[in-house]
Image (cartoon, rainbow over all chains, first blue to last red; front, top):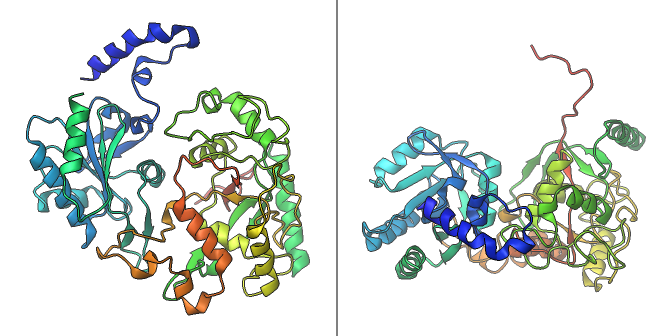
Length: 193
Length: 268
């Protein structure tokens, strides 16, 4: 999929050749200006594997931020992401990405426990990163968060972002009273343009 | 003890001038402490560590030098993910300032991403919300003038004035007791974790919406019912997004308090 996009991008370059005397690398050219896959960050998943964010190019993602010990809105966010997963079916190649707001306490073992307790499928990346990268992706997605006085919990947005294979955010599910339909529709349209 | 503080400020300024950094504002040390973030509920206090803060905002001239060295941050090149269409809109062109943006005035129309990229090149970072608010409580005589009606009136007076078409020079305002100029009165400023400001419709950890947050909260807290200026700042922050570029919004740099010395003492 990635090669397909790069190939497409190469075909496009000559059209703009006049105003691009120094063409950027193909992988950059293929990305729209608003792509969040331009962010340069590396994460650790629930199995301890490194996930380089920019290597998401070509992969659609359903992304939300939360934390492992969250009793309230996070289980609902994960549950709602699973509703998207079920509605999409196996033909979609989307990855489901849950990023912890609390990398200090949510170590790899905590993320592993979280994914096991929710019986998350192989399509899930439960990620932790450094505070800088976390802040940057939260800002890029429009997620707001703040640690609460007890030092354990966070106030944070209910937000499930649907990201196209080229990194464009094609939908944000921000009202927990709504269903997964709009996210599913946006994802299908992005994967089959 | 004020003279001591002033000596500390002078010493701090000299250290930084001698360090040979790329052009950016001088800094002063700010002694941290426990404080209440404006509008915080339940009497919660927060701790602010010692830190260093720029005495003024980053200027057009300094940001121009950055843009010249980093073409990806030019108006014509910047990615929409990182800055909206208002980016550097007051400038006459990609690498020209023009009459609307004097070299010594604070640079405005810069996004959070752009501010962070600039500060990284000079070894600084944006101040956190708490660092900024902690330093912004000070007037010329005291480190906490929040309860002084004159101080509040001055800030509110600025909030109610229309923005001048051409901004005055950064650092032209009377410095507060720390030696920091223009925390109020020229432009609003970016903070690193502005996303921690929430006034409406945000999910709480307990999964419910907070009625206090929903209505903005400030007016509901009898202890701080007069903190209208603070409410304006928190509400403003809660409305920002990282790519926003606004004509009244600039930034200044901060650093952790550890000062790199020429001969660091090895730790045991």
